[in-house]
Length: 411
Image (tube, rainbow, N blue to C red):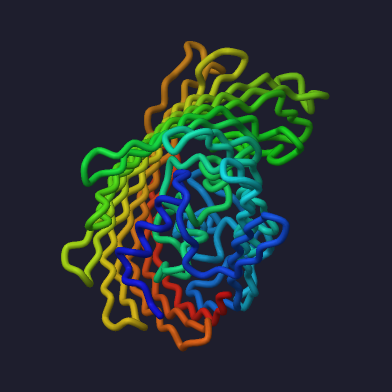
């Protein structure tokens, strides 16, 4: 039996923000008072991408490199944890164990070439009342709308670039921390809020994330601290499934070179502010619209001097059409912009370079998802991307496309 997509949407939103509900596709076991709901999803993805990845040993020029040009397209072969392969398996596993009426344990695990083998959720959730709850462990920030575990997503790869790049996911996905959440009914609306504090380095969960500057860190750099705080709110209309999400997060990171590879190596500190707004609504019973906008503002300090200011913005627009109970058609557009300025304290007098780095990347996406029955489904997705990037006022352009096919199974 298929639920309507508004019903699926409401179920997953309520679960994400802590309201006890049902699981759409789950195997349930009960033993000694425990109630276990689990979802497994896995399959194989195959991609044909043009142009292909350039040789990573290609020389870097003053205004960039062919490798950077290709990675700026943000196609599925860019910014992956594991070495990219055109045909690769993947897996998702979600489990929820109700220990008693007020306490449950949650886990979400993914295995794919984007993030490698990665635990996205592993926490205890205690709700002393229907209106208030707390989580401790590895928790999702809920300051974005990535659909890694959505069972009804029409996409092989999420259109939002902050959900499909390894370095971006590290910043805005999850970490060890503590959260408090509330649920309030306001007539036909459900208001859900979350605040949290996080320490990504705890239990060696994430030891290398340093904002947008991972690639510029030299050998011997040691991250001394990584602290994050966040707040999010989700307003859900219970009758239509329309929802509005707002999120904000701040990261504060610092480190030193130990030992220093060269005398000039300096201590560094990085502050990143992330703002998010998203809306998900149904224009018609079978036509869904999603829009999101993210902004990251980064400040990089060298020996307490502000050196790099980086502003990253992402917009994503999607239309999802339920053609049949077994078929979804989707179209998407996304745009990603980077503007970085440098205060070069090494010059005499110091100089501010407003156009240190520039990037504008846009993509058009289409997909078709078909349910074959007995848990089997397929997705066919096409992405066409273009980009312009460059350093110190220079500009380099490029374009590319990716055609993907997914064969998958849900249980």
